[in-house]
Every structure is written in structure tokens, then in C-alpha cells.
Length: 98
Image (cartoon, rainbow, N blue to C red; front, side):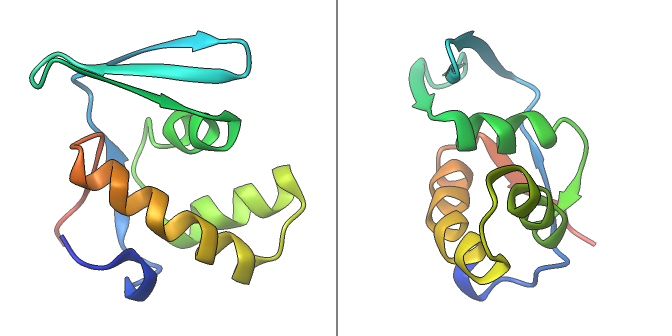
């Protein structure tokens, strides 16, 4: 899978279409039917998951989050890396092969 902290910012990622999700206030709850597991994410995680309806690069995601949440690109990449890794490890998102 790779380490998202050292990942190519041009790598494209997309969400797993088999994940079922629902809104709960500003947060989101997701379920993997395949694994029978539930996952909860905050509003930042929700925004990332929503954006990944179509493939996006790590850099594109970060640029959008910087505008929405008024953070620096450096801070965004640092904070987003462990979250993307966790989502990838759980099969919620995947890195597209080129």
C-alpha cells in the first residue's frame, strides 16, 4: 500500500463503492458489507470521503481541504497522511495504479 506520508502527491485515490454510508449531523458513519464493520469519521473525514466519489490526487484533496478548513498545505498533508493510511488499510479507499 505504501506510506502516505512519503506518498507521491500525484497518486490518485478513490473511495470503495461497496462502502455504505450515512450522515449523522456533520459526521458520517460508514459500513463495509464485505467485512461487516462500521467506521465513523468526523467532518474532515466526511469531506475527504465525499470528494473521493471520483478519483482525486492527494494534492487535489489537500488543496480543497486547505480552502475549506483554512489550514496550510504542510499541516494538511501531515494530518491527512495517517487518516488516508487508516482508510486504505480498512479498504474504504484505494490507490489507483497507473
